[in-house]
Image (cartoon, rainbow over all chains, first blue to last red):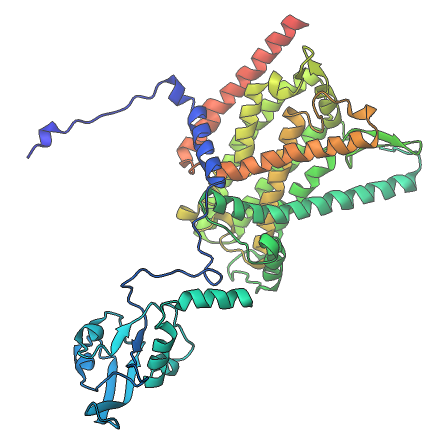
Length: 173
Length: 351
């Protein structure tokens, strides 16, 4: 332990410091300069924050090239989910290229912690996290998202311009 | 007090002046609350309230509607009469002081001479000092009648602080009064309209720099603004003397505080910065334009000091209570006395 090497330094103020006026003027000049600096405020509803790549926002269910959901109802996501937010019921698929599809699929966004474990668990790349960060709502029922709602999220975010489009809509209003 | 020789005309003129002065001051007070928030926001690289109306200019109206429609709450254990009276003790003296502040030179029109103040008292400064000391009653009574510990501490602190700083405040003016030789504010301004050595405006700040500094510091303390806002001290005392006040009663305290700021800004301008004097210009020779120029000069100077209030508030931290008392009694009071003595000696040699 090198405690003995610690040196206590006391700065004795000289007469100039004891006047306090120069220090106060220095402080005033700093705040005055800040008057003309760029404001860092983001005026949220008018401006939008663009999340960086890899941001984990609201969940979507991907569609394949024919517009059908990619999901095969394997329940890997429901198993991986630490918050038990995902539930579904699988059934025989009406299409020839797969055996199962989800008859209904629900994510309780009040339980979801946006960890992205479902995305990692999914073998079909059918479930993904999007950039959407403002999906607050008024009732608990409306935050339990069903299959249609999650597929709509895919339609909204597939081109990656979700917030740019919202900004343009703001301008039109 | 008669100016025109006709009593009815005099009364009409004075009522018109009162309406104008009160209206202008209430508007300035309302917009000071907005300016405070926007200036503080700009100094912290934020934007401040800008949603109500263009650039947030209707914010004071929204605030007023909010204050008027809020529920009136009176604490059950409070002394109700004093509790309800206290805000007016703060509010009214602050507005009454404007009566003697000249915003322009006396001018004649239509054969009459008009004064640019409501009352040209021969004891103008004493009148202002008396009324500003009255504010301390409002603060103490508000703290005491709330029957709650934090308002009481805030009120007591504020009483001690205001009484302590009243001394340097009064003594710092004495230097000016000795030089000018009058308590009448219009004469103090007239004295400052001349030039010193032919080029420097003979403002009292040039003749009394130390006096101005003491007056500035003491005026900050008198109006309970940071760095001297012991009466409020949010981190320690919740809200200080107005913790238990809500709705329009709270707004009265705020209006009183801002009105007090305007008083001291106008007083600093009048006493030390030449009042309505625009240097190197003879206002009375320019007719209407001279009066306009004088009013603009007065407004600009007062506006600068109002900005200084906001500026200092968002720059300096609050004093500790013992530091506050030490500054008042051990530094400002002796300095003010020294200022008087030095002024007297210099005047004796020059006479």
